[in-house]
Image (cartoon, rainbow, N blue to C red; front, side, top):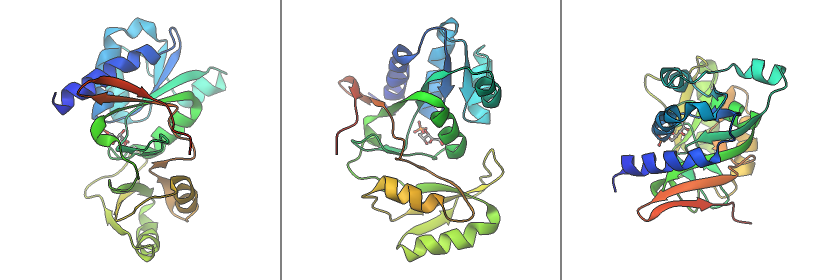
Length: 226
Ligand code: 5RP
């Protein structure tokens, strides 16, 4: 099966995790794009969506799905029971590297506002230790070198992502050369550096369930106890 077929299979499987008549939080990326297409076919099942990027918001509207503002949703006391998003890497604890699509900050915000995170990936994203995929960090442009020098001091290799400005007007550093044995500790450490908007480690709040598309079908995996 090619990778797009795996992505579509897992996107379709995610529909079983929607709460009928409720809102859904929607992430970003090519796997989520398939999810949005599948959601469009059953759009009456949900009350609307809260999106994590301008692009996903546009695709949702094209499918006839109402996109609501997060502040208005929370301000009205409404709940968002489920968040569906992909990942660049995911480990057995269901901690993730995200941000390959540069939407990590809004993804972390929307994920935090939702009760349950359902991560949709194909088997190629499953790793024992995070860090093979360069870790994205959203940074305020003025702090680029300050943050990069801290990363180099840790033995990592940060590189600004060419030509990318995030939906929040900031830049992305892609950080290679990290073997992330303690994702939650690294997330907490990098998050408190001045100039860092968001680090693309989703570890302190990991996914609640992973749907993993394999050649043999879509597997549901729960976090391994550490
Ligand atoms: C976007 C993300 C995506 O979830 C991640 O990059 C995976 O994308 P894809 O489904 O295209 O492999 O974090 O910021």
